[in-house]
Length: 435
Image 1 (cartoon, rainbow, N blue to C red):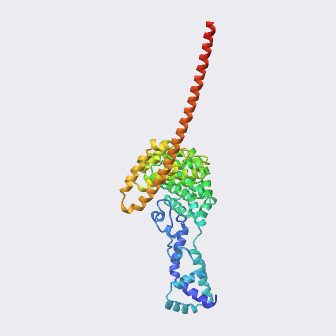
Image 2 (spheres, rainbow, N blue to C red):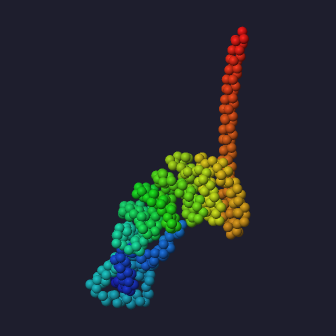
Image 3 (tube, helix red, strand yellow):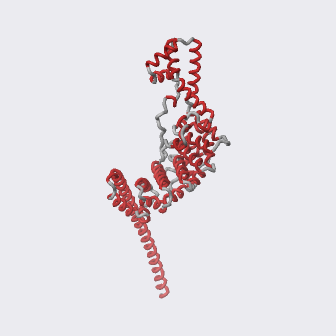
């Protein structure tokens, strides 16, 4: 870059130097406070509730892509800063600044360039790995305040969503730290820690196995029974993420009596409906996993009649979403060879349930017509599977009856033959005595 180009850069950057200096000062101040996670300028400037507002309540979340100006990401080069400066400049004022800069000596120009480079370094955004290290270091600091500990967890919650970051969490020592927070006395800390575990392990076999290796299953299942609804919800979310499509995770889950835990949640009419939704959704996932492996899964969902009834009874809820999730689980359970169609018919009253839902759909509001059609289609599938399974059960029962009848007839014939033989022997004895 020639002297005229350098002069132009300097004059442009000098025009915006006060604004940049303010940003640089703020960034430097944030760096001094580790618990505020320096790179997240937007998170340090907002309260915790604002930070979590970007996260969907149903566990899927996205960070708002609207950065607070170019300063949010810093400038990767002097040319990048030049382009930004040109785009935000007044041509007339720029011309005046250029004339002023022409009068600067080479030494003054060099000094200004060094100042600008130093400012750029201050504005540079840390990498995700650096941000994660800072948050982890904060969590390892026993003297950190509760507020700052919560903030560090909130930032990790966002950072672990990309799969590469989730994979790095264990390398950086983050998994051990987060798992340790599951026994924190504060419910909010435990809740966010479980949330992080769920986010990091979603559809990620590597992280699933890393976390399972730390022995979290027992602790998470205890948290599901917490009096804090949010803690229970996030703990169940973490369990679902850990065992979905994971044989080892499911083995641990069932060894801890996980089926009974799900049954208790689904049959508890006073429990938060969000927990019931997550529970019945997990049931469907576990059954589908078993069906995909054609019975090859080592550990199966317990499907006794009480468990089946807990699922079917969820259809009586007024919540349409819960009804749909319950129907999906019923559809999957009907396809399991281990379930008995007669249990669905006689113990769960599935026929009556489907009739009741049919009547209910006829009264649904017009704005829910699309939903009603979806449910009707799902119910038709369930009826077909149910009656096919029922017919098979009746056929098997008839076969068993025929086999039993055949066995009984053979036994009767055998006994008759024995009686006849004995009678003939007795008759021979009588004739012999008579002679």
